[in-house]
Length: 316
Image (cartoon, rainbow, N blue to C red; front, side):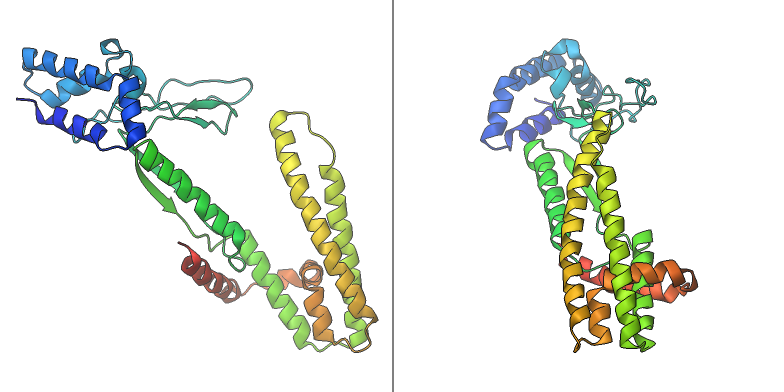
């Protein structure tokens, strides 16, 4: 009679699609399991689960076990532990997960964000992957960038679950306390207060023109700074990405600035129309002047609650 633990392993490997069968054949999984079962029946261990777990974790038992040790169903596993400290160049030491604690290793590699090198992906425990990732920061309306993030995370989750057959627990947060939220809420409040003051049209024109000129100069200065190459590869990769983003910001605001200039020459333009057109630049100018005076917590909370609901309802 074949022990129950072995049945679980065979069923677990047998439920996959066509690519799974190729995997089984190329890694000689059937031969490895058959040999393990025959040896176990001869030795008749008192705890078949523990015996089989130890056998499959022993790299000397099969050329495939070392990189493809399967999950042993509900068999008890040793507590996961961290391996010895590793160093790479000038980076601080880091501790990889010890792959000898019963984890299922498939050959998947991930980029170590500390060193920039690809390293084997080893779950902390068995076949279970605990994944936390940042969701939207709700300081403005939901947009295509959020959809792209949700889609990317879901594709990666499906690959881990459907192809690599990991048990994935994915948690995505919604950030509703953040500097961006506080800043946006404060600046929106300042623009609202500015409109309520009903300033003369001539003053609003001067304020809008000055704020737009200063904002454009600030964007251009940052663009010029990002055009200077960096020495290290990682910093250079980041610079290239940020440069593309900054070029987009400069071009976008240039179009906004032109619209404001048209309104400045339009005798029929109202103060509110000018404030709306120059809102981003004017809000930054007002924030530098009066931002410290906006401290009411309910302003920030109401802003977060509004966009929090939008983002949660928009999520898949």
